[in-house]
Image 1 (cartoon, rainbow, N blue to C red):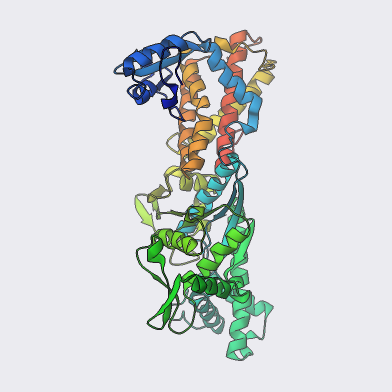
Image 2: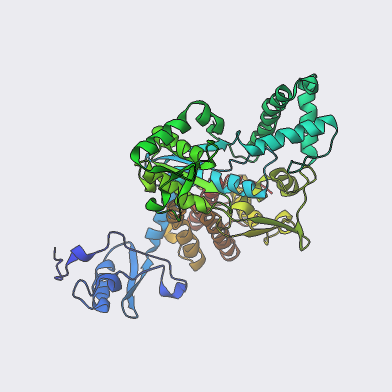
Length: 537
């Protein structure tokens, strides 16, 4: 198809990239569209950029359109067009930033899934914060998200946990390979309080009492600490249900029938190397017991049978092999490997006064979620665990995130929201009503700092879209810091209210609308992170 200029418009990309230039002198927005398609369209990029500039300059929303370099197009918005961004924020309110990237997509998001053998450590804490934030971001893009915790209540680690409880109840030391820490003694004492005669029972019955009651107590504590961390789950899935229901056996029989499970060296192997894994995996060991991956296969099938179109797994740093392993399992079952996605998180280190913090008061060997929350509070803990990409190790400076200064990122963002809330209260106390956004003359917002703040507001929907698409909720946190910075610069340059104001001119009203739009976007972003938006600090 040819345009009026004779350009073949079929070469246009499906998505046109428009970005904010780093140097504000280059305009409000820039695009390299002409350079992308010029040659394919049979037109010199700079010439095509000139045609685009000529056409765009005629639009009311565009103040100027200029060609730069070999074919870049720099755009400046008209004041009224910038005001439309403020109006859009205030009209949409809490929904500003949401989109339909994953409209009605059914997503199973499994995260944390720590073994019920001790309190949640720092790695699990990172997943609790980042996983919950990712769920919120995906929901903001239209997905139907089910947060799921895989309750690993089968296997050798539970046996070690039980033996540790029994030893503590008897007043003995921690068994070899057992679990230590004050919490073991606390749980053992509670088991005895509920089951006074447990130690007098035959060994098998005694261990079953400690297993049933002790694991239940530990898991109740995990749920409580997660809930207090503002991380709640829709489903707690028990691993042993896969074995008890026959789901594991059924899945393995299906693989045998398809020929994707073969016998060798007395064991049964999955032909995972034929589906992208680096090697075949033992699924049934030589002693006839299922390997751990057997449960993983049945669990994945169960998720898909429940209707989930995307199964997201958030796993720890030592689980890289699961990426190809789970995708291969899906393919071997005749399923779409793209329905499986595995995110790998890296380690978290705590630092205080320049020294690493390694020991918990209660767990003994590791720092726990409760230790972190006790030290800095829920907001600072969540924000600090979310604001860095999960695939990178992170050091959290406890001294820094405890400070009420602008050096502390969470304080910096929350203070901007509190400052904006205070501004609106002050306006009311002065008898100034900012009125309806439809009546405000937002075209008066022409100051450079106003324009910078407005354009930053306009970036929020794109940031949320990217955070969902790339599974990177930290992008929201970093954006909020940029927005807070843009607001503080605006506030320092543009008078909004002064003591003694008793009337509101059109510019004051417009700036109050801009401030309220900024407060709304800060609140929306903090909500996506599960962090509070205080009205005063």
